[in-house]
Image (cartoon, rainbow over all chains, first blue to last red; front, side, top):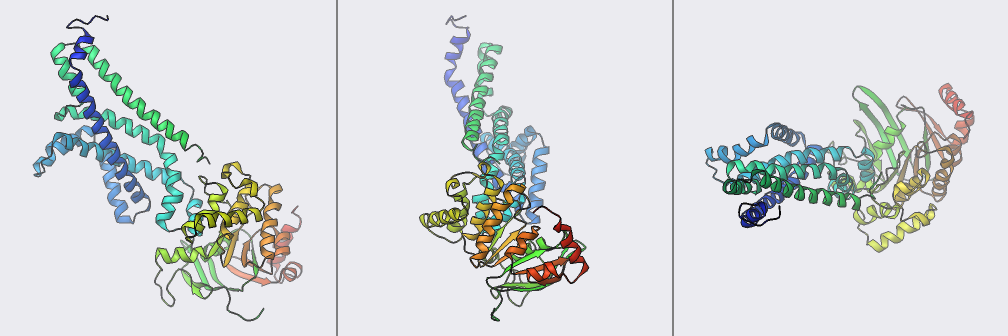
Amino acid sequence: MFSFEPGTFLFEAWDARYQLMAGLAVTAQLSVLTIVSGSIAGMIGGIGLTYGPWPIRFLLRVYVDAVRGIPVLVLILFSYYGLALFGIQISAFTAGVVALGGFCAAHMSETVRGSLESIPAGQTEAAKAIGLRFGQRLRYVLLPQAIRRLLPPWVNTAVEMVKGTTLLSIIGVVELLLATQQTIARNYLILQFYFAAGMLYVLVNFTISQLGALLERRTAHLRY
Amino acid sequence: MAQAEPLLRAIDVHKKFGDVEVLKGIDIDVHKGEVLAIIGSSGSGKTTFLRCINLLEEFHQGEIQVDGERIGYTAGTHKRLGEAAIAAQRARIGMVFQSFNLFPHMTAEQNVTLGLVKVQGRKKEEAVEIARRWLDRVGLTERRDHYPYQLSGGQQQRVAIARAVAMEPKLVLFDEVTSALDPELVAEVLAVVQDLAKSGMTMLIVSHEMSFVRAVSTRVVFMEQGRIAEQGPPEELFTQPKSERLAAFIGRFAGRAH
C-alpha cells in the first residue's frame, strides 16, 4: 500500500504534483476572484434592492431572478461562447470569473437584502431620530447588524462557488478537476485521483467554513 | 409665560393612511419649558402626531415648525428638504421610543456617543464625557460598558433617554416610553422623565400613565379620532373634564393600579 513504484498512487501523485498544484492554484484564484467580486457586487446589489428607487429595484430584481433561475453551466457557456458572438473575446478563465461572479452577486444580493430587511424598523427610526443620514445609518447601524445575519448564508454561497469552479473544466480552464482528469488520462488511477481531488475540495471548503465560524464567534456579541 | 414665539407650532396637520384620515387637522403651540402630555385612546392619532414632528411619518397637509423653522419643507413651498437638511432638523429633536430601539451592537456608552460624534462632530473624548454624565444622571454609571441585551428593559429605556437628551435637543418626544415595560420597571423610567421635566426641558409626552401625566405635565391634550378634543392644565382636565368622552376615558384609568 505504501510502495513507491511506478503505477502506485503515491508515485503517480508525486509525479503529477506540479500539475495538480497548478490546478489547485487556478481553483483558488477563481474562487477568490468570484467570491470577492460577487460579494462586493452583491453588497451593492442588496442595498439597491432594499433602499433603491423603484427603477433600480426593478432592474436588480430582473437580474437576480434571471441569474438565479438559469443553471450555472448555461451562464458559463453563455459568457464563453455567447459573448464571443457579440464580438466580446475573453479567455476561458475570464469568462468563468464573469459567469460565476455574476451568479455569486445574484445570490449575495438576495442574502444582503434579506439581512437588511430582517433588522427591525425601529433601528432605522432610532438612527433617523438622532440625525444620522442614509449613508451613516447604513454604515454605523444597519450593516454591522446585517453582517452578523448574513455570515452563515455567505459561507454557504462561498462554498457553492468553490464547487462551481469545477464546471469551468467544460470550457477548458485547467483548474483542479481538469488537472486531475488529465493526470488520470495518463495513469488510469481513476478512483484514487478523484478521491484525492475530492479531499482537496473538502479541505478548501472546510477552511472557508471554519473562517466563517471564527467570524461568527468574533461577532457573537451582536446578539439581540 | 410671555407671548414669545412658540418652540413647536403645528398648523392644521392632516395625515392619511390610505383612505383613513388619522389626523384631521391638529393645531397646537408649545412654548419653551412646557411639558405637554398627549392622552387619548389607541387610534386617536397621538403617536402618529408625535412621529410627524420629526418626520418619521409624512403628513399630507398643514405645517409643523420648530423654533420658527419649517420641518421637512422649504418655507412657503411644497418642496421637500434634502436628506442632509432633514437629518439636521431631526438632530435638534430628541425621540424616545416605546420599544427602546437601542443599537444592539453597541454598548450603552456607544449608543449615546454615536450621535454626538457622527452628527454633532464632537471629539471622541468630549462625547464620552457627555455620555458618562448623562448615563450617571439616569443612574447607569455602572452599566455604561454593557450591551443592550445585558440590560433590563427599564435600564435600556434609560439609556435610550440618555441617547436622546445628550444631543441637547430643543424638544424631546416621548412615545409611550413605559408601555413595553414590566410594571415594576415603570417607576424607574418615569422618575428619570420627571427629573428631566423639572430641569426645564421642553417635552411632548404620549402616555397612558395617568397619575404620571398629572404629576409631570404643565398642559394636557386629549386627542380623539384625529382631533384635539380638549386641552388645559392637568388638574382642570382630570377633575373637571368638559366632554363626556374625556370623563369616560379618565374613568377607565381611575380603577387601575398605577
